[in-house]
Amino acid sequence: MSVVSATYVLCAIFACGGIFSIAAGIGGWDWFFNSGNVRVLTGAMPRKYARLLYVLIGIAIIGMAIYLYHSVNVRIG
Image 1 (tube, rainbow, N blue to C red):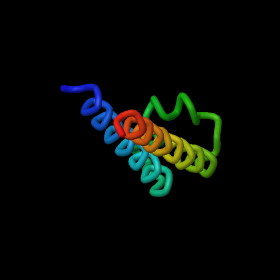
Image 2 (image 1 turned 30 degrees about the vertical axis):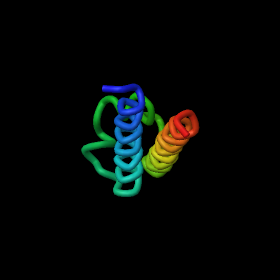
Image 3 (image 1 turned 90 degrees about the horizontal axis):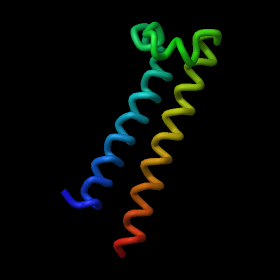
Image 4 (image 1 turned 90 degrees about the vertical axis):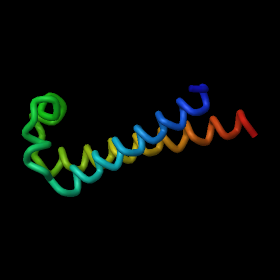
């Protein structure tokens, strides 16, 4: 696998993770917000703020995917 192909795969993984985080924040999934890994970050927050935080994290992750995709295309082209 070339570096460019691996970068595209990483972009797709980031995009999926960001979409999942946004969906969890919007949906307020109990199984997501009650998991131990999420409670480490948002345990002291009210659910409303935890949901907002995960929507913002999802937007940031999608932003990283877009930046990474754009930086690869600039180097190639």
